[in-house]
Length: 224
Image (cartoon, rainbow, N blue to C red):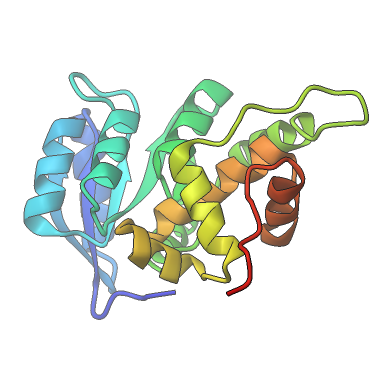
């Protein structure tokens, strides 16, 4: 996984000035971090991300105007290289799942200890998934509940983009190679894979490819 050279450039997006200032001050005091901007809503976060090119965006979810999930989707659509760590007070499935599906690399709650938050930003900058325990448990429960039994219904079909990702994985591409071929970020590939696992009721890449072939979602290529 790629690692930023020099300090981690950080953009803080939150509609509460006290929260923005507090986070910015905390990271500014720590070696290895550089706060390069603050945004009060999602639209401003997208604009600043394009102008300042941060390594990590600390993104609140509930903001006026463009909310956090919409901003994450917009960043993914624009091919932003910034990785998004959601920092919020909400950990319900109506908040966690849309944020991860939109392309967030991690999901953390605002009551996280300071040292955990510092480590989470460092891990996010490396492209590693970071999840609050409650968010991780929610995703695991969703994955288990979507695993089909002998007589259960088949989960929803994969989107066109998810099929494109899975086709590349089936052909042997790594996450980084698939991201380069589709002109999206590696973090977005990981998010697509997480969504694929959930829809297919599997827990790893090999099982996802096998299940997709079994369901006819992927067709073996004829030998040349």
